[in-house]
Image (cartoon, rainbow, N blue to C red; front, side, top):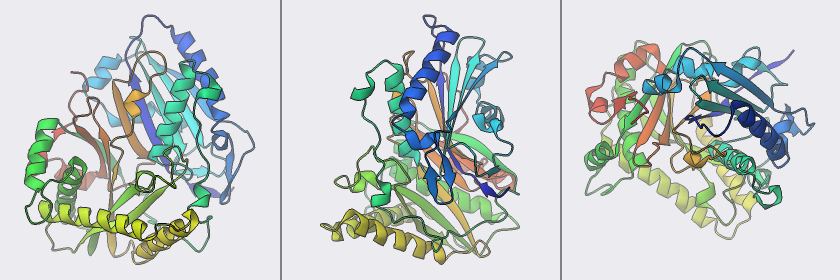
Length: 411
């Protein structure tokens, strides 16, 4: 059987014990509301057929599981990412790294801890969804579970194909043939509010960016320290590049509603540095800001153009940038921000999550995912690197001056 590599957008939602609702009732409510939600998100019940989705109603996967040897509080005290993988439903397919083309587009696993806490692991194929899409799905599902009338709950809009041109074999991203052969490790770094302000001050420059955003500041610091860690590797490439996916919905709200489902992103090479180069945080922030402004100007120049015209221009530019890259000479890093997504508002009827973890799986190397902390005043970075590079990265004193390595979720 022909196989394909599958990348998946993942959200793990952790909930503490609720004495008023039984485990059986929760399981029934999740399954019933998921079935109702899928009537709105009907492509998720289908299967990928080439470059299209066959809405054949084969269904999504829902798995119930139990953890009896560890309370939720023990897990949250020091989250273990190998254990976190066990809370995801990826084990229902033969090989999540190279899976058959009939792989379900949506998989859910509800894991119940003996103490009464639980985690909902949600995996959606990255071929059809981005982080905003999975957030929209979760909010709709939660509303259904709370008992809000189905007709009153806003559904998604499946009109992304009216913006970006249809899939075309001529448009191909560079492929890293070694991606699934390398051993990677993911670790969590938390920037609290006070450290973020200190980092923002460090990243600021009167003649470049006087007041960078938190995401700009964290991205610049991570980029600097990622480059520093890679420079100690024996296999480092000639050119390191930073890729940054940008959610286009808030940038073109008149054409792209927040509920638009799909991969509505623009990814560009925002930073590049040679093998002997050294990153300066304030300069990196300036380049990040400039790339963002360039994208806004590009969109603004197309004011009055049709949605498809703007989408085609952005798609051609994105693929033109990628065509200049080769994994033989370039070492790409990606920093993707999930900040401002309302994932902590996922209230299914037993309270809001106490912790949300996000990632892409199979775990791509050289990747950092940024997500808001529960109080909205901090940022958590989930960084995936080779074991060799992670060993250097996690000991970088500059990084540890602003971020804590995997602190307890419980406060």
